[in-house]
Length: 121
Image 1 (cartoon, rainbow, N blue to C red):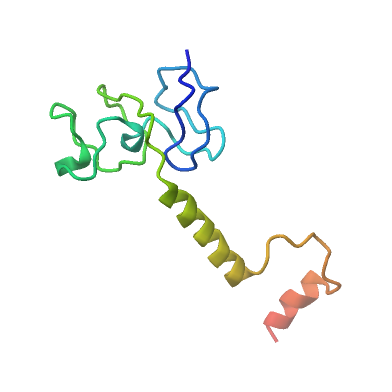
Image 2 (image 1 turned 60 degrees about the horizontal axis):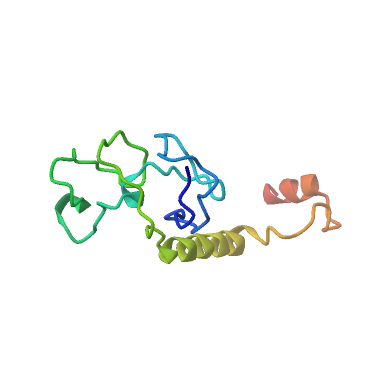
């Protein structure tokens, strides 16, 4: 049984191919983040203490890690576009720091070993 409207809290990718209920170690088929997490639960609410509206649920410190909560109920509106923007910004910063990852191997005529040796001269 699948829920067509369910999507990953992080990337927004569809989870319709995953069987329900989600297993504790199920991952998003698009971005590989764990899904049986507080951020994917209908009881998750940043505005309340412990960020959980279920009073009987045990306190979970890491809201983005798989847990054993028995009150977990898959949220249909858990996607937060901010995560996608943060990932894109991090990739852009890494690209700026370490160079463009889109270059094809061998695009530079310089010998990589020679370039590494130049670092120590």
